[in-house]
Length: 214
Image (tube, rainbow, N blue to C red):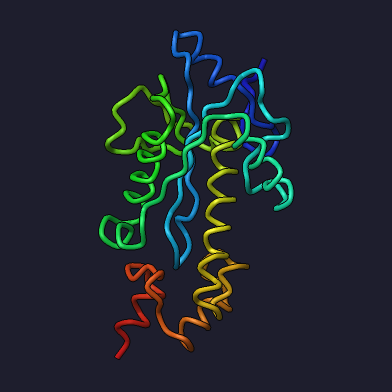
């Protein structure tokens, strides 16, 4: 029989990575994901989630595949039924470290913020964050393959979107309540017309070009 090709579009996430780790004697498994690498403004946010195998909310999936209403409903269920930690890396840290290092820093902080240390961590992506000193594995397209990572992707997405809505009230005109800081045409136009805020990532080219144009 030909091997199953896991693309993330044909299959739903399951608990197989978690079950395999538990079979190796690793009882407490955390899924970790981040959101916010691409925006021009706002922090990068990571979440770590340890699901209760007996109380997994139905319908967990990659946050990008869910409607906003479904994400909100699942966010509440995950918070109520799992051990959850949310952490960020600031705009200043993004500009100092670079966005990849900052996103990994947020991941490490999220793991450290759990109520007790996990035995094993499932990381979305193909790079292991520096500073993670416990047992861990990376999973490409993990948010579409692991239920724990899917849960983390939902928590991080909802938290960051809410944070950007709050920032939009303080800095109107950039549309952060709609674009979450991503480089939409309206956002880039507002950057030119309104200027750069303290929440913009100065190391990102569209912001840098405005700051240092002649």
